[in-house]
Length: 147
Image (cartoon, helix red, strand yellow):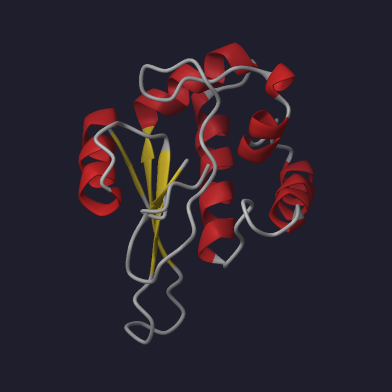
């Protein structure tokens, strides 16, 4: 897992997703068969996490944990854009058991739960993109954007 700057996330987002803008989180699925037991990797913007945490009333560290959970669920094969709420339910259960505040999917589905900033935008994070092996996903991204 990499926690880094928005500038670096912008570069990763541009390189792997063709989107020339920063994002809060990207997930990078492992290349099948390359390493046993390795699901992939996650990159998080510390700056965006801190900026998003403030209006939601929690700490940057909590936001990083929320982003990490969301990205790990993507690495486990969940896709909230295509699974009829399965990932959202799983994320909500895990957040509750871990004592984490409102998650990315809930923010997108219920904007009244708080606005977050993606890059310079004031809209909630976009949903994850469908995962393709060996490419990341973002807010998050795999090099998918995970959120």
